Amino acid sequence: MKRGLLLLLIISALALNCSKNETVLNKNTNTHAYYVSLSGNDSNDGRSEASAWRTISFAASSQSPILPGDTVYIKAGNYGNENVVFETDGLDSKPIVFEGYKEVPGDNPNLNWQYGDGLNENIMPLLNGGDRTTGIGIDITERKNIKLKNIQITNYSVSLYGWKIEGIEVDNIIAMSLGDVNKKYDGKGISFGSMANNNKIKNCIVLNACAEGISITGDNNYIDNCKVYSDDNSTGHKSATDYFIHINGNYNTIQNSRVERVGNLDHGGHGFSLKKHGQYNKIIGCTSKNFWGAGFQLRHRGVKNNLIENCTAIESGFTIRDGASNNLIRKCKTINAGTSVVFLDTVEDDGAQFTGRNNRFENCIFNTISTENRERRFWGNVISFSYYSEPSIADSNTFVNCTFDDGYYLFNIDRENNDNKMINCIVTNVKNFSRTAVYQNVSYPLNFDFEYCNFWNNNFSAPNGNSITEFNPEFIDAANYNYHLKSSSPCIDIGTTSDAPSDDFDGIARPQGDGIDIGAYEF
Image (tube, rainbow, N blue to C red):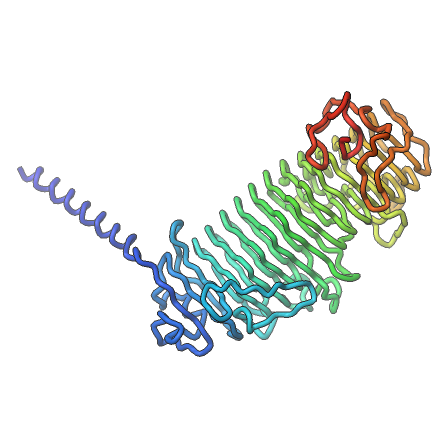
């Protein structure tokens, strides 16, 4: 009898505890709107524009009454040197939203910002730290399910930062002038540190963050329609941005985004970078401009099985380094590249023992400048097996159905290379075939296979290989980078189906005729 009574009491207590937990989880069934404005006061209740709070910092703190599902509307104006620290989480189904507005809450202000524009506190709320050498504008460390929208941030060491975060979404954040220009590596725009998973960064712009523009360390994150620029050469390497958009993690996506070095900056910069440990990431529909070599960079032996697709490198190229392997670069192009593709290795990652392995370039178009500049070690080469800076092999990389036009040297050979090949490719208007022992006193042979490739109007004889031709490919308008084939092109139907892609640069199925066309386009 006593045992039965005890069991009944335990069950009753558990039921009461579950009921209490359910009450806590559901206490905010009715979500609320709160307001922040320069005319407000943090002692107000925040429930209307007339009774708005004064600071974003108070609204984000645990002292405010905000709960999951609530929205905080922040009116345009200069909020000065606030250091906003978020202390409350949202829920998956009820995120906490902080949203800037111009005149009417929810009016979705947009600066329509173009490079060269400044910030405008009359359109969106502005956080101005006043000293770019210190402080964090907004800190979301260890927070979940928060949305930040329509905010400008300038003159901090870091504009927006958080680690161990999840379900964070930032939209239309514009950040400028970040970091100490006299330090070697300082200043970040939007930085999601370690254990940052399942977050989104959309429609954001960063200008002149000394060290990093947008960076994420974590998995399943998404970057869309973002832009990062650098034009500050006031202290050379220190002031110019180092990493523009940088990812360390798995299953992340970057799409429809742009990075650009503006002017002749001392730091060559790194455009889109996958670094350290990164698998199954995607970079799609992105553009880099004016990078010496690393407009798109795959770096370290943990970087493998990634996809770069439909991307354009203007005055920049693609870099494979420090052991990156088994990556696919497809339907991409370079325009006026200093060097289109670079393989190199350094002491980073404890020495990878190989430079790059089993990387595949398919349906790509490489347009390279045809002048040499030895002061820039990657200049004027279509494909460079660079000497820099550790001796190791670059092997088993494949270029299939690619078009190569212009360049000073087709190959720069300053490291060991083996089992690399071209299949179904077209090479035109290149001044020299290869060079070696350029930046060091060691000569290396070229170990490169050519299969079903066409060479035309180059200042060298076509190399030996299998089914090598020397026809005028009859491009529609190569002078304007239109490498589609005319109907009379002899490059139609002469390729091999072995290891060929199933479609072309435009997504047209291969083959269209009796065989595979060579080059990036199927007629």
